[in-house]
Image (cartoon, rainbow, N blue to C red; front, side, top):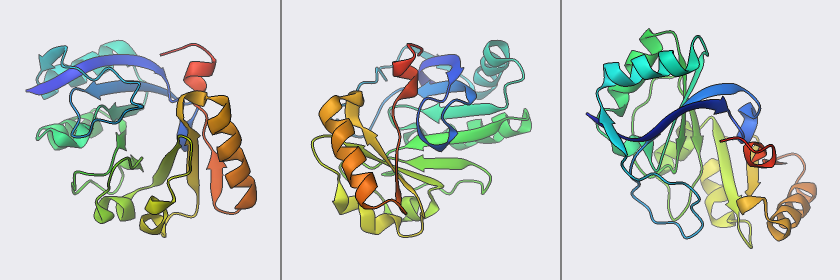
Length: 191
């Protein structure tokens, strides 16, 4: 049984896929306790893998993108079974992870690693997308882990003006490697 916080249909509001319709499966629980976390990932209900796939189908119809997020979606043992079932249902699976839980993922799963306190170097190497949270500073200590990524996203925490200005100045200083990622879903007022 999977521990879940919510399943909903919206758009990807962050990162390289921003603006793309997606069904979000927010798994409950996280192995970190970040001060700036704005996500309610508390356990709301339990469901089997087939039940989750059925709900994704009911909520999102034929939407091809499903984003597994949390908390930390890779902290649950059944997440790999869910990925397999979603792919067999014709879905393209994306994962939003803090990168702390090493997991062998199928090669066609899109992995966004957004390190917080720490990150497993193997997950950083596997990442298709790296997103650093800018909160009063750019967390440069994580940069050596992402040498394989040509582009790193800087996401101003909470879209707060000082964080936006800091991220913008940093990206403009390093224009070949960094890009700004605003939380567009919050700007347009959707979940």
